[in-house]
Amino acid sequence: MAILRYTTTAIVHIGAGIVLALDASQVSARSHALATVEGKKGLYRTTKPVQFKVGEKLGFESKPDKVTLAGLEAEKAAKAAGEDGVQ
Image (cartoon, rainbow, N blue to C red; front, side, top):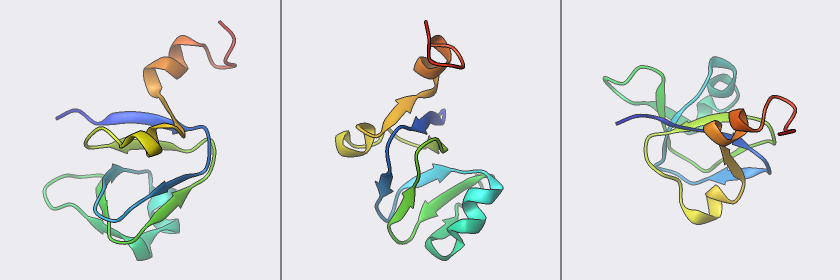
């Protein structure tokens, strides 16, 4: 399954048990609340709730719930609007 990529547009809270694709700095800051997913390089399962600030890029293994989606912008939509958000 393809990773669904988003950018946070608000502070986003992710509950335990969600599989995310994160960069090294994101993993380092949240290592206490993440576990690596065996056989899937770069994917981490949240073991405790975690929070992400505005502007962070996240990848989800499955579609986020509606509450989480409210604070996310899909990567394709962000690219379509251009780097500065002006169409």
